[in-house]
Image 1 (cartoon, rainbow, N blue to C red):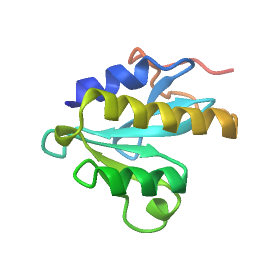
Image 2 (cartoon, rainbow, N blue to C red):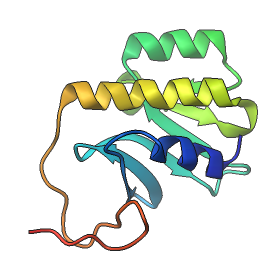
Image 3 (cartoon, helix red, strand yellow):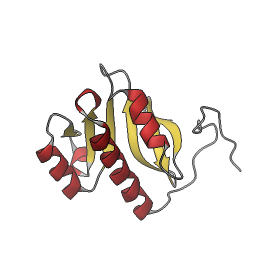
Image 4 (tube, rainbow, N blue to C red):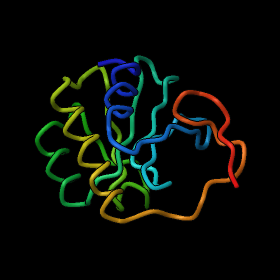
Length: 126
């Protein structure tokens, strides 16, 4: 898979908005980040925010695809995805799981002005 595939799948999820976070594209629902994309890592690397139990299962099942993010973020479920090693079904499953978790946790505080929206344009906020 490639970064464009990651973006295409993430953008297909209901209520998703694309923005930027710490120099990476991010994907949010209810203003809650469920995935990020780093296109500067070779063929691209993504991150999905999974429940810890699901992270453990995915890492054990496909260690070439999934690795916990180092440190506290990884212990909380943040999981790197090696895009070159992933297939469509695996990537879709991981992104959908991360999106579902974010939906279940509910919305967070509103985003700041000037955040880039799904179509790459600055969004107006009230």
